[in-house]
Image 1 (cartoon, rainbow, N blue to C red):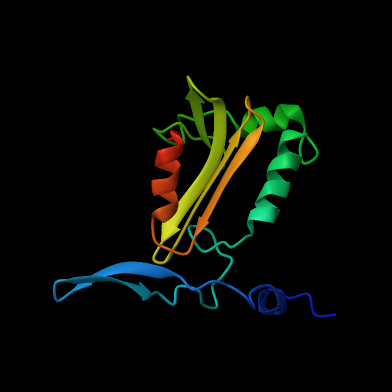
Image 2: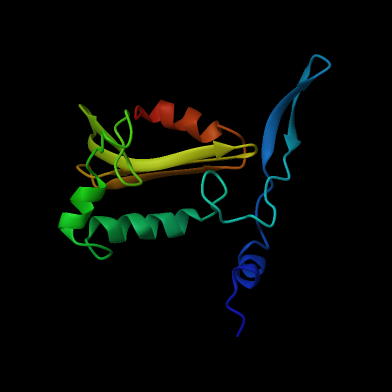
Length: 147
């Protein structure tokens, strides 16, 4: 059985969506395929891929303490001012919203892809936005009223 990353990628990416980036040329605006995905698929900083179903499973397991202890989870979800001037913990943006309560998550964008993932800890729901258009997931997040 071949368990290398390349064999896994070939099986899981057979129906991968193409990425699109907004381009302006000669006074016209259009969406162009980016060809973003390459042999480096699955890398951090915008190159990671997942499905909504898998991210939802992660969120449910995270909230139920199946993945890590409550103490470790609190450590992950606590801001680390020495590491970042922003409200960031170990891998999570941390928000304290008057409307939504505690919210943790992450997101990113690269040419032709964007993603936004938020766990609304006090409300018990998860927001997952995956887009094959640059920065579009952030437009939807703004409409939701979260940062």
